[in-house]
Length: 492
Image 1: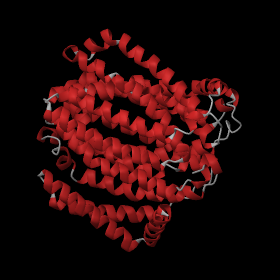
Image 2: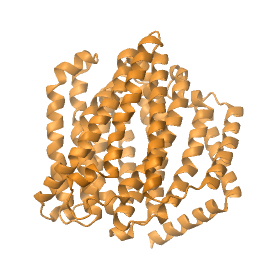
Image 3: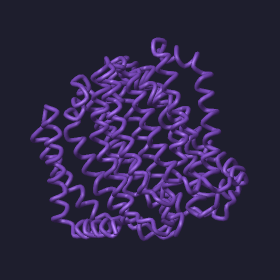
Image 4: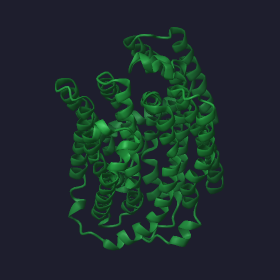
């Protein structure tokens, strides 16, 4: 397959349905972890995976950002060179993780989990490898990312059943399951890219990527600062507050899966610079993101008790995170468009001055604006308004972060209006909202209280939504027919 063979709808649906299929594996895995440990230990799990590890993997996407752009533009040797460069950075990040262990362990109260902390560090190396490999595959064969994702998720659940249930390894079993699943995904991606790995490395690319990555590091530093709000959540909310947030996040993250419907849009724009597919991708994403958001907001407690009854109290956190996920999903589409139409690096050179004056730099700067909104506000709220109540800490931190994300979405909208002519499908969006409200009303009336009933009612709500939207929107019917035709042609 060449870059001009990329099918945005086919690749998008492969990724989206792979993500939806992993919802089941994700729920099973989360249930195995959450129900095999105490609430406090589940908070420890959250600290390691959502607070500590992310700080050391923030640079994972710096080099791959430019690698994807080079591969999409057929720069020979970009794949092999990109993998080498990211592995070197991974080694440095892992070394930093080990060196900082004596400081981080007592700071986050992990004295009894030192071995868990150490083993979890392997995720850092795997994260860097997966980031660069997925960046290369996205540039030309984005649908294969979906295949790798699904296989690794299924393996994760199977391994977890052995480590957590069979061997009773608890949190250690969870970490080992993730590490092994990541290793399987890496092996699949390396096999896919085997032909490209035979090419020689182009060290001159690394010089350009390092130069360009100074902007990525600027952006990632901003993300580190912005992420301080989650450290504040862990400090002021403790293990219980962290567990409330983590439980709600497991559910709300499913909404963001709809953004994968536009996964192939970015490389398509890089390769051909045509805007025809953008509106179609926006429709596809919102057609699923809006009802998913409405469903979660309708019965948040019902979804949370799937994990454990004690997490039902985090319903307000989940409602806010559902809105946040919708905001982030829309923002991801606009960001992909802006990244895709930018041409400053089109000639295998990354001119520092031009990048600094481009739309890329504006996007890279947004985390700093985000931090200016969230950090002082969160510090005041968490120290003066919560009375050290873990649930209130989680609610305030989540609400403040969501408000800042909405402000950044407005900025992105302003930038894209000046950059391109983007047709917003307002009529289609209105139809999605109408059908979503009808579905949400059904869920609220039923208001399930048992896990099996919740899953069954959710499936019924999805059927109601799809039936309504197919009945009232002829474009959706046409889209469904087009996708089926595309899948059939793909098989041949």
